[in-house]
Image 1 (cartoon, one colour):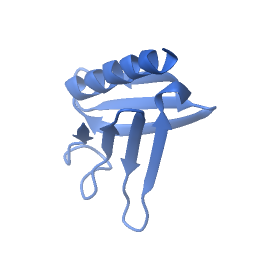
Image 2 (spheres, one colour):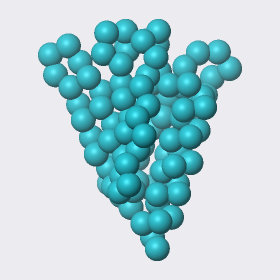
Image 3 (tube, rainbow, N blue to C red):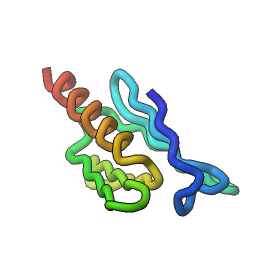
Image 4 (cartoon, rainbow, N blue to C red):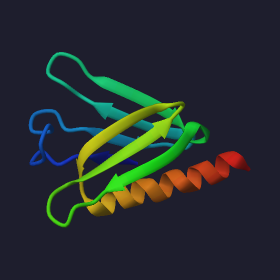
Length: 96
């Protein structure tokens, strides 16, 4: 499933961030004017998922894997909660 950050959020006005939940992992795409950063993480590699959902404004989701952190901002609260739930179920499937 594809989730796209709101263009109204900071840093996403021209090129919004995207998160793809797939069968074996998650892909985070942070586009930029001259370059973009795309990271694909297998579910079994994800050690933690953090979400920040302010009362007003857009939510941020952070993925921790192999000592690295990937962060995406500008999603709705429902989107980040759905992504986190999907990742947790994917981690459980990967563990067997």
